[in-house]
Image 1 (cartoon, rainbow over the protein chains, first blue to last red):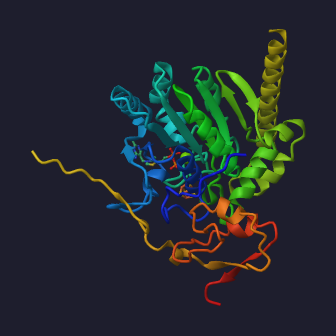
Image 2 (cartoon, rainbow over the protein chains, first blue to last red):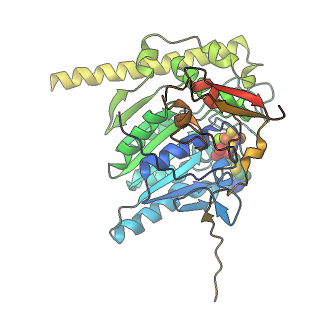
Image 3 (cartoon, chains in turn red, blue):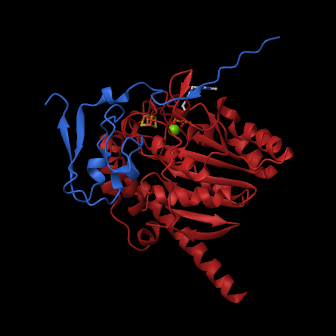
Amino acid sequence: MAEIPDEEFILKTTSACAGCSASLILRYVTKAAGKDTVLVIPACCTSVIQGVYPNTAVNVPVYNVAFASAAAVASGMSEAFRAVGKKTNVICFAGDGGTVDIGIQALSGALERGTDFLYICYDNEAYSNTGMQRSGATPIGAKTTTTPLGKNEYKKDLDAIVEAHNPVYMATACSAYPVDLYNKVKKALSIPGPKFIHVLSPCPPGWRFPSEKTIELGKLAVTSGMWLLYERENGKLTITGASKAAMKKSTPIEDYLKAQGRFRTATPEDIAMLKENSKRKMARLAHEAEAQAAEAEEA
Amino acid sequence: MKVKLAISKPTVGASGKTGSWRTFRPVVSHETCTKCGNCYRFCPDAAIDTEFNIDYDFCKGCGICVEVCPKSCIKLIREDE
Ligand SMILES: Cc1ncc(C[n+]2csc(CCOP(=O)(O)OP(=O)(O)O)c2C)c(N)n1
Ligand code: SF4
Ligand SMILES: [Mg+2]
């Protein structure tokens, strides 16, 4: 296990809600990235929680940019740093709305161009900063202010979209496993080229659970198989952490759903679809891991 | 032409003293603490130091530390008590 530095780059404190995953994730991302880093942040909770102008809680440079532009801005920034021989980490830190909906073309472009940067999407499964409207990342059955009876559509499969670009490194993570997140950010930043990490980010007011349950919620998401932890290095898939056990035997998805107010109106059909979707994803990953293992054996 | 940029400076207390948000105050019993580090590790606001002292100027009272302590040695006490 990596020794995590005690130095903090998020000064006391952000203005995030009590128990916010985004704050916790930012704490570990900056610990892993260190001082020689620039964060590019599009409109999201993280643009606001930095503090009140002219002060900021974030002790690395931050470039706050327009919603759709994060990955495009990072592209230019990375090119400029490399042109003058600087190795500075360029990291986009964006919400799910700013990634799966609004910023997706800029992200796709940067991945395709092979930009040397890391894109982190912290996923609280809605437009939280503006009061919890549904996003393309909101799961079926979840109540938001714009889906008062629960969302009818599937959560967009962002990871499949990113994977189709063949980035040098991509991973999933969850705020409940900060050491795993730290290790993945470290590894990503050690590889030149386009990298992507998708972090599940339980949000107490948005998902409607008490602030002290943030870690428990993240763990329930992973142990139930609703969220899968893995990484791909140049395409090579590795299931990581608690998902290894969850893929063999998962805890009931109901335990995860019942711990949150947003699924209170979820119908039995919604729950069946969530289960089916999780099963399908696990089967697909397991199949791919097996196929890769067989291929490696042949070679 | 003079260009003025809106640049913020890193400052402790950039969001004010967020300790005033608390309804409940987490209190660590250092006698029963086994120094596992979970409270320090999981605090979203780094308001607990490596000696497991809580900075009450900034602790928002989310209660995560209470939940992640395997020895139940952090208790929540109402602020008005
Ligand atoms: C072009 C544009 N449209 C709308 C907004 C308003 N807005 C600011 S933050 C936000 C929500 C962002 O959601 P997400 O990306 O999921 O991040 P989160 O707030 O959930 O952390 C919205 C709609 C904006 N700033 N710019
Ligand atoms: S709304 Fe959610 S994501 Fe935004 S600051 Fe609050 S807890 Fe964090
Ligand atoms: Mg969001």
